[in-house]
Amino acid sequence: MAMTGQASRSEIIGSSPPEVRDERWHIRVRKLKKSFGTNLVLDGVDLDLERYKVNVILGASGAGKSVLIKHFMCLLRPDSGHIYIDGTDILSLESKALSDFRRKFGLVFQFAALFDSLTVEENCEFPLKERGGKSKAEMRDIVADRLGKLGLQGTQKKYPGELSGGMRKRVGLARALVLEPEILMYDEPTTGLDPLATRNVDEMIMATCEQFKVTSVVISHDMASVFRIADRIAMLYNKRILEAGSAEAIAGSTDPYVHEFLNASGVGAVQKLAAGEHHP
Image (cartoon, rainbow, N blue to C red; front, side):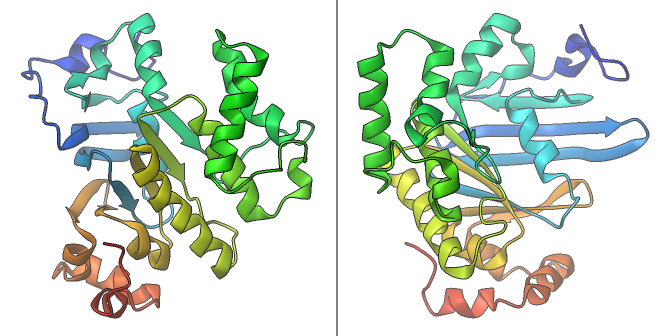
């Protein structure tokens, strides 16, 4: 059933032809619109996110970044538009098929969102228990593997309050990875971290993308972090994607807003790129 104030499923789908699957693009968004009451948040967003790469959605606070990525899992439904994942328009899926499709995703929350009363091991086992089908021994082995690969050996019996902010972020990532997602979404992953912890999280994001062969979607306005990790950047401005491309292309953009946004960041992104700090 369509939500109040939204178009019905048939109206959302309309008569647009099915998107041709392209192995380069894992997620493709076309003409996405979303309002909350009279507040128009997204107005015809077109966006391509590259498979097995770190894709950053950049924009000012309140630009609609979080609203946009919630659509990828249909946590929100648009007023109109299309979202293609692996060539399938997910807005056309019925509840059971959509539930299965959501298994492609893993979420790494802004402040890790760990249960304080559970150990690291119990936090990471939680999604496995929810999904079912694994024995206690199997779950323990999976969790130990993910923690080990993220440099968290020996933390299984610790509680979140005993860990640093950066370590909690890693535990949150390990929890997301136990379900073997194809797409990992990070919501402002470096918020509240000091520069050293931020760099460690950035390295974690890049290493995870490479090691686990996942497509990474990061929303951020932390410019130093963005230009350190991004293979591809999309600038969300005025309810649409203003410009998208490689980190180098965005750094060299002649668009007045992009240029102003970069200059106002104070991190010297263009100079850092020129110095070769962007990862290969």
